[in-house]
Length: 92
Image 1 (cartoon, rainbow, N blue to C red):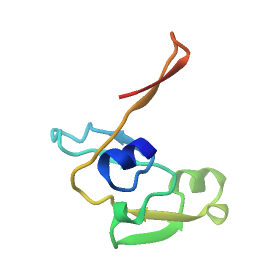
Image 2 (cartoon, rainbow, N blue to C red; image 1 turned 30 degrees about the vertical axis):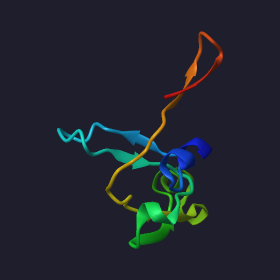
Image 3 (cartoon, helix red, strand yellow; image 1 turned 90 degrees about the vertical axis):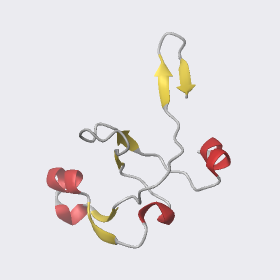
Image 4 (cartoon, helix red, strand yellow; image 1 turned 180 degrees about the vertical axis):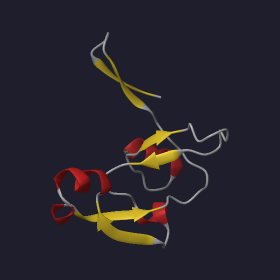
């Protein structure tokens, strides 16, 4: 996270992303059940329940999720994965 802040000059977040957005290689689906900087989601946000956990555990115990659409624009990203043969982490 610190490296991303230093590289981009902007707040960083942990997200899961998938660039399999139809045929458009310049779009991605990005989501995660964690905190996002306010600058990521702009002004249109909703406080609601966690959809997946709410269905599994009950809506009454899963309130407090912030839902919004991440603003489009340039993105600095870093992929972190495990290297099982070296018993370590790799960041690219």
